[in-house]
Length: 401
Length: 236
Image (cartoon, rainbow over all chains, first blue to last red):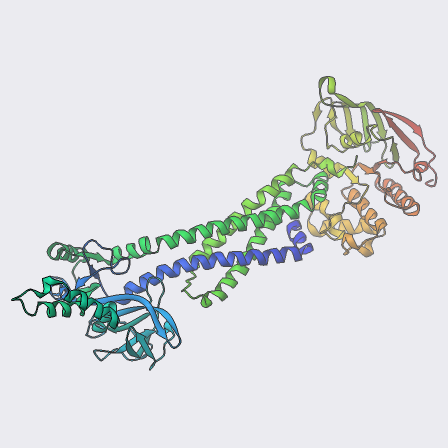
């Protein structure tokens, strides 16, 4: 038996191909949207992986340091390091900001890393693609290549300048912003450093407060002013466990004895994926749903239109004894062929376009497979209207009068 | 009467019920022998189309009896079960416009029916090609319908009607869109094919040019047929 669907497609190939291309671009956008979500999740996991931590100790009752602000005294890490099961503990700060780059700026997450060694101190970039790690206490930086900085570039953060001594890759925040690693002390200063006018204003206000200038209490005012211009806080303490210790048990001990909030890796993943990007995920989900409906409407319209164009031929086919299922199969095969063509175009266009998106787009094969079957289901559903119309055609319509 | 051909006895068709009922056919009797081409003529609203649809097993009569070849296909409310297969295997159709399937070439337009009946593609195409040769359109076998002239399209449509060797062919105004030369050519072909394949052909027509060619003519008026001899001109 000849393929009626195939012959009809070849006969009206122009309409079919251009519809397939249009549908394909729509499917391509859908796949990219799914890739954007996967990229966000992957960015979040990369952030956790790259921190090199097993536990995140943050300010009590906060979801810090990535989803909420968190502030801890920078000497807390010492007592944590002394707890059973803790191999390493290091302070870290995270500050997302616009970093000046030439005449423009680039959005980046500035990470303050504690003095130490990459392998032994949590928070350090675990590998470099060029240059070296930070070796000096101040004014050196390691930047992710996505920031656009090159070795030897000068980065301006607040009022200080840093020399890029190393480059790393896939070190991004959960928002996909590239990371710039600088020494912890510099990062602490950058978080709270104000301009000169603001500092002067603050000192004037403090000096005007009679509480700090009582007779018989010399040095109070100077001490208060000194405390205002220094920052003894960090956002988190990154903890690496000794082998053989359960993360939950150590986390419970820190919570109990230090009265701080501690997150294990699964809990932190839940915060990043379930909370931080949950709204974005819902947004993307809405877009996917809309795109699916639009795709279905396009397929339904074109198949309906192709069917209506040959109502008389369908009546003739029925009159000369063609089975209903042959006619239904013809229409459904056309819809499926349109879907397959659209998916191939969509997959190719998504794969070609993904690297050019500003945010990381991760095209997962499983998503493509699921997308392919979703397209087929949509095509089958979209063809039902046309099939219904075709089956309702009276063979008597082929006979005049 | 041989085993092939068609016989209709007391065929009735009523549309609607009660006061609004319309009786389109009021006891039609008709018999067409194998190899015979008869004309069916009548004014608009006389019941021609209803009769054609009943004969084509597209609508059910209300009463009467229809026999196609050896097989009774309708008898006072009883009818054969698979009308689709009946139309495919026992009835050929030739329409006013050829209504060829635009996305199939000439050969496949003709071969589609035997394929639907279960014949293999190669065999069906060979059968189609033999018929196209008989109708002298074999040189357009690979052409698409849109590339054919009106006369060629009608010949292909006749080949499609004949391809399953049905006992009866219903031709609904087959010469309407053609000039007199082509119309006469089509009627000649129908007569040749009827004789060659021993098929009974009923030609519904208004075409004055071809009416004198029939040996028998059925007039239908107000749902009743009357038979009269035709001139049978030109096909002795």
